[in-house]
Length: 119
Length: 106
Image (cartoon, rainbow over all chains, first blue to last red; front, side, top):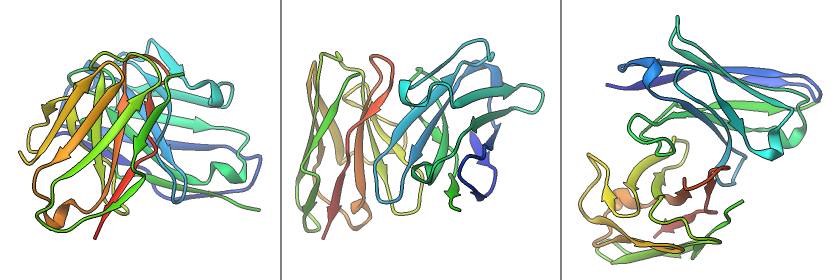
């Protein structure tokens, strides 16, 4: 059974950085990539970026380029998403998601990590 | 970027109703369209992939259709557990984009 378990709630000040983890189990880690999707309070879903299974290729939405870094650690079956220069409008629930069969089809999701940015 | 426009943004329905949600892409995305259900405080759940394929474990009352720019999600007979928000998502090109969501409530 595929499971993605994310790290816990974060509270950050404007200008700080946050790094969220997503630990995978139940499948061969290197065979699928990870995407990161966020959801501001009361809002819809927003794709942030992606890394492929072996960690050799990443891409991100232009809106986040320069601020977001997605990485993987195959030794621990974990993906990380770091967002820098936080602003109040980065307050959101951040999800990791994986595509086991077809890239871009998210069959499995983490439980979400709430990041609050406040002075 | 491919813009995804869902309608309506919300609807009220009753148990047993047939419900239809539409999603329009700003350019041709072939059939690279998924539908997700999200309940309050939970992660989204994949219902339909490739526009019309039912994800394993999703109830058969959910169906999807369409190709190109116009897509539809249909719930044939609304059940109490179906009250949620539904999102379409295209994966034809990067950046991946989602529709704004349709909230189905009583």
